[in-house]
Amino acid sequence: MNKCLPRSLALFILLAVAAPLLSGCWDQVEIEDRALVLGLSIDKVSAEEAQQEEKVTHIRNDNLPAEMITVTAQIAVPGRVPLGPGSGGSSSDGKVSPVWVVSVRGISLDDAMNNLQQQIADPRYLVHLRIIIISEDIARGNLEELNDYLRRNPEIRRRTWLLVSEGRASDFMDVNPPLQRVPTLYILSMMEKSVSSGKFPRDYIGTFWSAHTKWGQSAYLPYVALRNKDNILIKGLAYFSGGKLVNKTEPIEIGGFMAMQGMDPGGYSTLFKTKELGIVMTKINERFTRTRSTIKNGKPHLSYQVFLEGDLDEHYGSNIPVNSSGKLREIERDFEEQIQSVLTGLVKKTQKDHSDIFGMGEMIRSHHPAYWKEHIHDKSDWENLYSSIDVDIKMSLHIRRVGLKDQ
Image (tube, one colour):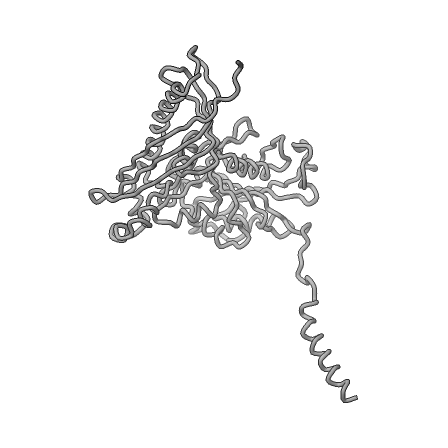
C-alpha cells in the first residue's frame, strides 16, 4: 500500500502537468469563419463622397482631417477560390464569383479597416493579403500613416506587393482576366513572373520599407496601368524622394535600371536603328555590372561598367546581310551608344528629382565612411548631394547568337 502511494502521486502530478498541453485548439477559428482579404486598393475621396462616410469610429467630423480615403477589399469566398488550374474567367452572375469586393471610406487606413469590419460578419484576416495598390494621388501624399499601419500589423507579409496605379486603384479590384478567376492572384502571378523573366526587380513591400529607411538609397515601386479594362501594363518605376512619389520612368528604362544594378536574368528586347545596317532587335539574356566609387574635389564620383550578353533577334530595313563578326560589332557599337544615352538620361532624371534609386549613397557610406560621417547627417542631406555628383557609365554588349538562318 505504501509503495502504490508514490506511484499514484506521480501519476497525478504527470496528469496535472499534461492537462494544459492536451486541451486542444480551444480558441480555434475555422477558415470558413474568416474573411480572408486577398487584395486592397486605396484611393483619395472627393469632398462630396466624404460627406457620405458612416461614423463608425467617431461621433462628429469636427477637428478631423478633411481628406479621406476609399479602401476597396477583395475578400475570398469560401469554397469558390480555385485550388488548381481550371477554366479562366468568372461568370457574369455574381453568385459564382470567387471573390467579394467591398468598398469603405475612412479618415485613415486603420479607420477604413474598422469600417470594413462593420460591414462583414466574419473577422477580417490579412495573412493572405498579397497585393496592395495605391493610386498616384495617394503616393504623392504622405505615406507615413500607411506604412506605419502596415509595418506594425503582424499579419502583413514582407513579400506582399505594393503597387502604384495610373488612375483609380479600385479599378484593379474589378478586373476579369481570362487566365485567372481571381484578379488578385492574376496580378500576383504577373509580378512574380516578371521578376523570374527579368522584366522587373524583386521589389516587395519589405524591400520598399528597407530602401525607405536607408539614408543612402531612395525607394521605388512598380507603376501599373489598365489597358482595355482587363489588361495590366507594367508602365515603369514609380520612385520616391522625401517619402513621396516624385516621378515615374518609362517601361524601357526598367531594363536600364536593372542593367545598372546587374540584375539577372536579362529579359528586355530593344528595337533600334543602326547607322548602316537598318533596324535590328536585340534580346538581352545576361547582365553584369562593375561599380567603383571615389571622392574627387570633395564630391563623390561613381563609375559603372555595364556588361550585357544577348542575341540578335531581328534585322530588317536594309539589304546588307549580317554575315560577319564585323557587322555584329557594328550593331554592338550602335547599341552601346544609344543605350548608354538612355542610362545617362535616367540617372540625370533621378538626380533632378533627388531620388537615388540606384543606392549610390549606400556605396559611398560603405566605402568612404569618413566622408559620409562628415557630410551626411540625415537622408535629405544625401538626396540633395545626389543631384550634383558625377556618374560615368560605360556600356559593353556581346552578341552571342543570331538565330536560325536559311542556307
